[in-house]
Image (cartoon, rainbow, N blue to C red; front, side):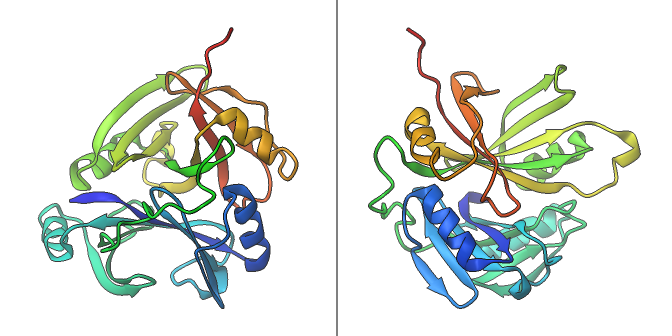
Length: 261
């Protein structure tokens, strides 16, 4: 059913400031601007910054507020959702008609389904999306959940995404599962807690894919508060945390770990 991640939506209270911050992060100017939004085009998705007061439904704060997944056939997707017991409503979004999943059915995750864009997606590469310091796209989105079994049933059985990684990290007290979506992933970070099992899941963070993790760290060091580069949870990866100017989005960058001499 789902072919790709069309778009990530981020609510911001200071649109000009957020636009400048994400232009610095990505190394490219916005692809499009409007009075209440700015859109960036990366190699595998769009990132839409939206003025928080213009978004419904939304609490009004800053942070990730939507995941728009691309499907080949919206009507077929609607029938599949019905057959799988997932409630939805039809509405118009920033890119046209879409299906918004009921928040109870998605356990709080802000999910919409939209047609895959007719264009050759962002695969119309922007000038800045190359080179050692490039952010080439999104690697994974992160949700937090107190009910990993429920999350696996939703993303795997109901949404049809392929489970690619499922490991428990005792030192962190966490279980991490990864579901493949096109060339990116949905990560569910879980700390199982029966007392909170019925609480909504939270769309919490994003990992940006680096062409060269050391090169990106060097490029961003002058304008962002960064952690040191460290070993990632996935084999063969290295990551660093971006601590500021992300407008409510928990953010890391990820790339291939360089072999030590």
